Length: 357
Ligand code: NAD
Image (cartoon, rainbow, N blue to C red):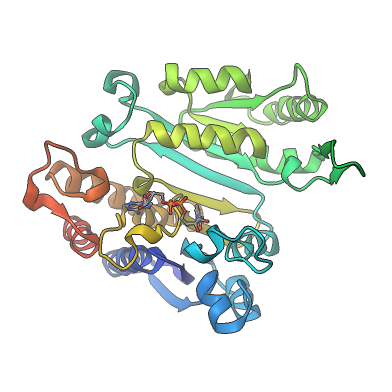
């Protein structure tokens, strides 16, 4: 029997609306094919919300978010704020606010490479081929610790703080995921120097005992940064703190080639939040140039992680693979070998994926 789920779409700013249109279209097709009932609502966030209500995260959006089973998000951001760091009300406050309100303590970023796009990376194809990593990045850490500046303004400090329960809850999520994948987990820290990392490692070692079927490796972050470009296939599930994850996931996204191809999920113990890793891309907004594949991949993540629909998620990835194998590209992933008439805009690319679905 099909599932019944409430999905909130938050397109946000810039190319957000253009790409989420296709994420939603894919959800609709999956629902029709597999007999699921997905109902949709829409809400404002970011610059569009500030313009309409004065707030980047209106109460109505938050209420709708809490009442939904999963959220498909586009992006927030507007040139007006990029050039005015002093602006008090900002689009990204919407994003931070919703993550906090929904208790989204884990950010998941899969790095999956499509064979057809191996040449788009700056790494050699033979090093990359077969790379399939799932990052679990904790979302608290030094970013939210107390920040201070001395009276003479010459000394600054940020408090890096972790509590046992914070490490335990994300570690369990990562181990559960490792069980469904290749039973390998690498926990990344800096336990040779940092006390928070020593706590991190101690807790992960304890949780590891609950998952004897998963092989655990502990790695220092500097080594992990090096291994990612040297031998990315070495990694499967990577579990790490916010600061380390921030840097490692961006490094890993670059080995994948294009921002337009990567999705991420933020999860806690309730509603999950699914989005492309790219921003609102003002430079191409409204021009039918945005690559919708990251939004479509966000939908695949939603189906797998929030609804447990692995088969449907696989179907979406296969449809994208077929689209790429048939030679179709958006401008950001096209290269000199791409046939001119196969370089598509957002709408045509979205339709192609639906055809292959
Ligand atoms: P960006 O990701 O928006 O764009 C970086 C570059 O990649 C641009 O040249 C853009 O055209 C291109 N690009 C991005 N997504 C693409 C897609 N789907 N298809 C084709 N090309 C794509 O990052 P930026 O330029 O640093 O930031 C623009 C705005 O987005 C800023 O206001 C920033 O604050 C915001 N931002 C939001 C998020 C988010 O909402 N999660 C994340 C990052 C940046």
